[in-house]
Structure formats: C-alpha cells, structure tokens
Length: 239
Image 1: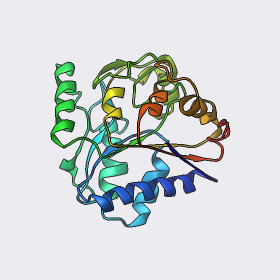
Image 2: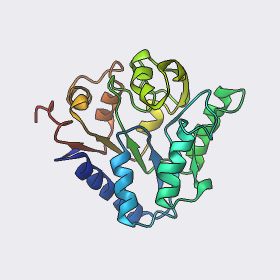
Image 3: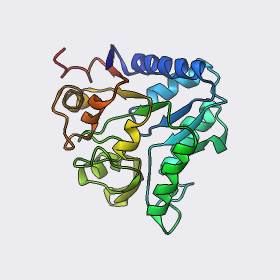
C-alpha cells in the first residue's frame, strides 16, 4: 500500500489525478471506477484542469440512490454526468451508473456485475471513505465477498448526506451499490480523503484490524492500493 500525504485537499487532488492520468496513459481505453461525494471532487477538479485526454476511457459508478430519477440533481447519475462525464470529456454512453429505475433491482444488480465483467473488469477504482468506514454504500457489517446489491443506508450515512437535500427526511433509505468483493476485483484501488473529520476512520481503515465493522479495512487485503490524503486526514496514522 502506497500512502501519499499532501498539505491540502487541492494538492491531494492533483496527486490523485496524476495516478489516474498515468493509468490512462498506459491504457487509453482504461476502465475507471468513479466515486461520488465530496472526497473525490478535488481529484475531478485536477483532472479537468489537467487537459489530459480521457476520451477513450470507459467507466462505472460505484452506487446510486433508489427512489431518485436519473435527472434529479441529487442522484448520482446526475452527479457523474456533471462532475465526470461532461467535465472530463468522456463519451456519455461510456459511463454507466446502476439502474434503479427498473422494478427488479436484484436483476439490475446482477446485470451491472455482468457489465463490469464484460468490460474486462475495472483497471483503476477511485474511492472515498465514509465516516463509519463505508466504501461505496457498503455499510458496517457488509461481507468482504459481497457483490452489487440493494443496501439499506444507516442513519449515520443518511445524516452525513442530508447536506445535499432540503431535509434529512428526503435522503433515500435504499441504494444499489457495488459490493466490497466487486471493488476488490479492480486491479488498482485509489483512495482519496481529506479533512480532520476523516482522520480517525482513515487510521482505522489503513492500520486497524481488518473487519467488516470497518468496511474500508478491506483495502488492506488488496495487492495494489494508492492512498492520497491531505495532512489533516493523515493525522491519525501512526507512521
């Protein structure tokens, strides 16, 4: 595991962007896994400013809320479209988000898994980390061999995401998320985190026990992980 510590979120974003650009330089049609939330935004900002050619990239989003239309600005489909697809010059049909519009969500989850396999798997998976250690929307207790599925969001996760909604009651209770097992099959994992509020959970994930109670601790099981932190998020690390 490579851990890079930078002084600011902006510098961390630039360092993470360099990892992405190297992956795309090595493989112009690389399959990237895209995360949403606040953690990867400095990375996407840096990629947009870099002028790098990502036109050949294909991608898969980690997760999506159940109950929001794709054109709802709070949906992850809308976020991926605005923050990733359009800003980075990717083809709209090359980036997929879990389909939550169909009646059979379990079938949709299985189809998403198959689509990732059909694409040859994910070359580089971008990740953030939740305050309770969730990866994607894999909440504490999620099995390390879990696959794309419907997940019930914890109250802590819903409270953390309430800032994107008019009231906490509007935050969906269900989502469709890639499983930890799905994430661990990516060939390279790139975790980015910033802010003092992430210091404790980053330390637990990277240097604590490997346990489903801290889903992000599964990163310790992967053979190729790059972690990019600002100084505040790295404050809890012992080395």
